[in-house]
Length: 180
Image (cartoon, rainbow, N blue to C red):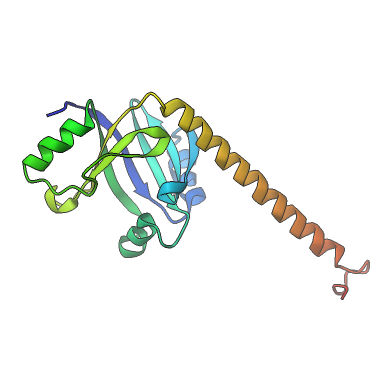
């Protein structure tokens, strides 16, 4: 079997990323390395590295995503443990031969371009396990996703500012009531 190199991360599902960051970053004093928008998984992920592993705070961005369904069923908390492997395809083949139920029979591209696959908790004594293999595209994809999140935040900020300005323009000088 492909060698499991290390625990890469522990993912926690949260319903409020800012409140979660208040605890993990501000109270426990963990460093926030970055926040990434992951549109194909309909989530935003905050990365907090500790030595050579990360705590990932995962917030769904849509009510229909798998993360949102998990959050609605179980509430916030540990979602999965991720192991880094050398060769994910051979690892999945060996696990399949050993009767392990795979959520992803073939790897998919996850955050930052990693090849990932999940093992079903039915085969792992109740723990959702992610396997991942680093790809050469990872640095470029991570940068593009961080830029996408920054662009989205700036655009949303401009929409909010325009709304506030519109509201303020609708107020009469004496402040009694909006103009019609």
